[in-house]
Amino acid sequence: MFARRSLSVKALPTTTSFVQTQLRCLHAKVDAKDIPKPTPFVPDSQTFLTLIGRKMSQHAQKIPDWNALFSLSSPQLRELGVEPARSRRYLLHWRNKFRQGSFGIGGDLTDVQDGVGELKIVEVPAASGTATLTSSPGMRKIVVNVPAGQDKPSLPLDKVRPVQGTKVIRSNLISGPYVEAIKERPGTAKIVAKDGLWEIKRGHKIDGGERRKAEVRYKRRVEERKTTRENMDLDAPTNYPGALIFWAYIVAALGFTGIVLNTIRQSHQQNNGRSKIPLALIILAGSSFSTLSYHMLNVLILSYKQWSTNHSIPLGALIGSNRTPLHLWQWSTTSSLFQDFGEAIVATKPRYLLSSSGLWSTVAVAIYMGIEGRRRNVPNLWAFFGLLEILPTSFAQSLFYIMLCTKPQSANSNQKLLSYWPAWFSIPLLYLYSLNSALEYAGEGEKLIYTILAARILLILPLILPLSSVSTQPSGSTPQMFQHASTLRLFTFTLATQFLTQKSIGGLGSWEEMPVVLLEALNSHPAVQALSYDLMHSVVAFGYWMLRGEKAEMVADKQAQELPVKDQSSSSQKRSRGKAR
Image (cartoon, rainbow, N blue to C red; front, side, top):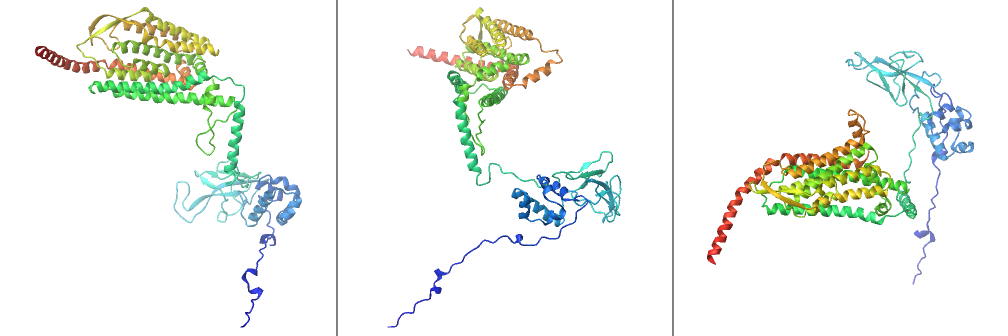
């Protein structure tokens, strides 16, 4: 047997190792280039450090002269006290650019006096011989450097060069960074050597770099939540009943709206779709709801902002990278939303005039709904009143008009004349007292809340006060809104009471000044805007309902023609049944 030859240790691949060492950049060992000569715009090291900005002029005393500025290395600058390191890198960067002839604005000026170089627009020969609106044939306009106080450059026109970074606009204006026009001499400007003229703006990181941004923002949100919890622990008075009422308002508004819309749909189906719902009323209802939602949302946003400011709590955001939670429950329990709303609408006399006009329209609509709704046997009338209680007037008013359109009356039927108890005339008087008291109690907190609550309760009376029938009269003999003399008397009494209320306000200036005063009051607070724009919708809906009486009577006539046929068929059926018996 032959012995196996052993391998050399050097032949094993695992025994060979390479040591990688880190080498310094080559620029540390490269000799410095030639020192450039100063220019008329940059005559010394002090001016150079001033021009490049970033507070480098504070190191001017550490650098003795021009040669030292362009010959000192980075370690030598550090020994001289040029800190931090980014300042040294910035200085070396500009030093290298200056060696290469890359200057900032004004660096190529040749005629400079006391750091100021003047510029002038001149015409020089051009390659193209075509004339333009702003230049002569064979010439073009450029911006050149001229001696101080002169209009021509020191060199011949065929040898001058345009100043870098400048251009001619509108044939007689010089444009460029840090270029200042000389007003006394049109077509002339100047460049002044000042701090930061050549500065390269240093960017700043927002919430750290790309890797640390998420961590920094997360820690910030945690700190904000901690601060919020600490602020929430303050001994702030809580009003849980008020918060429950606020959230119940929102739920009830949606519920009543659903009930009313379903009632209109059922009434329209029971009528077999014969009665057409006017498109104008549908548009008014939609516009009223949209306008009301927009302004009431602004009221809530304004209240939340004021509350968060008073409690030093971040506003919060639902979207974006800086998402933070909204403290809606804490806001609803510790804020005075209803009181702030009431104080906002009675804060000044112009505001009170606009707001009270909108509230008076609510009384008029409530009285009409209570009378006409029961006379026409409108189903779920309580839902219409609930909507009128929660939301301003025009939305419930438009829906009530739509409901009446789905219940047309025959033209040959008699309508009841209703007489009202004296209690009906007390509604405008009590409402007048409540509004005047609200103006007196402005700023007194609980009294104002109770006064507003009493005024809202008065709106329920037209639904429960009794009516009595005294006689009948043919339909269509009078306009739709004033078919009953007693209704006309009550409506006139309400308008007279409102007129006396507005007249007693006073202090609104002359008739010429009043539109401006009212317009300022309208745009002063979203609560006033909500009531004022609602009043406009209510007036438009009321005017339309007044003018469409004839169309309703025509629809009613068609239905009245069908009624005798149905009555004859029903009577013949009864007779046949009697004979069979």
